Length: 233
Image (cartoon, rainbow, N blue to C red; front, top):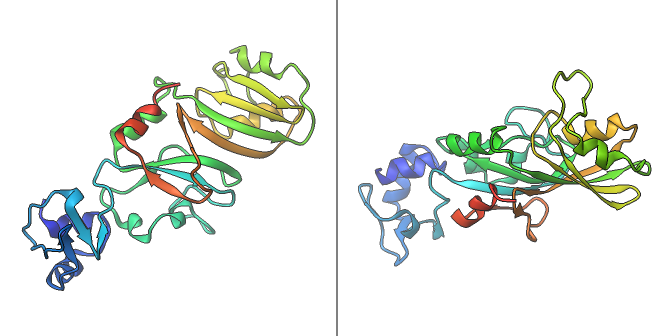
């Protein structure tokens, strides 16, 4: 791929703007040599304005989503894309969230421009476990773990029972919940069905991939080994 097209696809600007950037010497290799538009330099060796290029197509990002942000590109208010560099909105192919977290749920959220990877993660056949920590407004009854694990629990307006889920009680109003499917507002609706209300909800792990010290609102590109963790656990 020509350098101009590569930079435009990564969202740094239009092709015309990237031609100007190359002419002005803003695109170099790691040794400081100016690159030409037809350069065939390896992606990892290219610098734009003295900074390494963003990851190439096939990227997977992990964001520690704060509450108050919506998983959308069009809704009003604060969007999860606001937490990424502006140029990421201009990437081709576009970055999409891998599933969603509702506005008041925080924690691990994936983005990718790889449609095959996205569908593998969200496919019911993959059964990628998602681990949540929930804070409730009243004490647990004591029978929630058995109910959630039964494989017979039905949610309102649903026609199919939930897959078995695991519940670990942390204290009388806090629990860790492991889900193997991703129905609409599932964790909140499960507790609501027991007469309780979730006041705080955070996704702490996807598969065996955790946040591992990633600050709230921060993001990182995943390595191949980290991507593999998503399908473990």
